[in-house]
Length: 299
Image 1 (tube, rainbow, N blue to C red):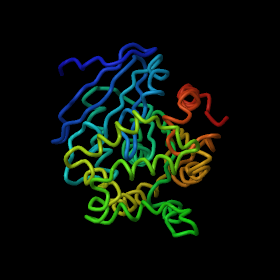
Image 2 (cartoon, rainbow, N blue to C red):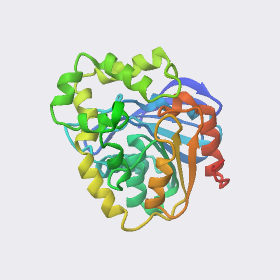
Image 3 (tube, rainbow, N blue to C red):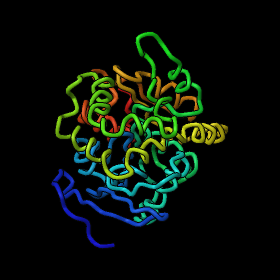
């Protein structure tokens, strides 16, 4: 593979952009640092840039890989295959290509659901699993959070964005309006996501095919839920860290992962909403490094 483009510096050295052809798709990923491997999986509507403030601290002691997931960022816009088992297969193909061996796996939002699927399918290939601000489809808690509540106090977008054709038709041309509302609604501090970063996410969503591709995670929600019900028949034994922001999912990630795994620590991040990479990056990096080292992360 040709050397990647060096774009920024970090405590662990340069952060590089790379591309790879995997399973018929063009995958973009970031790489930095050296040491035991960590793979970071972002969610919707973000890209690998969501890890920008966390990645340098991890790269000081670890090899860090952060791909743009299927259909998002600079990765190609596949027409289908957005169930979490299939997206996990994309990630596994990248891990194999880079010959990383067993990894510390971290996922936020849909990246957290993909990370769980990966850990369930490749139990000897994951050292630790960290799920940030995500409740897994198929275990009941997410489904309960989607039930309508007064004043819109429920995860209404999960249903809306799953309806084929309708969501992209109504959102097309209004990506900035919709995403700005989303970032403010689910943050502790409505200004936590900087305007330049917000614009990056809007620009990514306005790429040809990107809106429909990203909504594929929601269209395939019930496929992923059925897959997870099968995975959940055998609990994970790998150490799991599950964290939620106090202004969004709160303790639900920990409660959900306790249904799926035997060894779970975690809880609630204070002064934080959904966008952990922008809202509390230093705190999250500290928790992850402590967890990787076997120090828990339950503070």
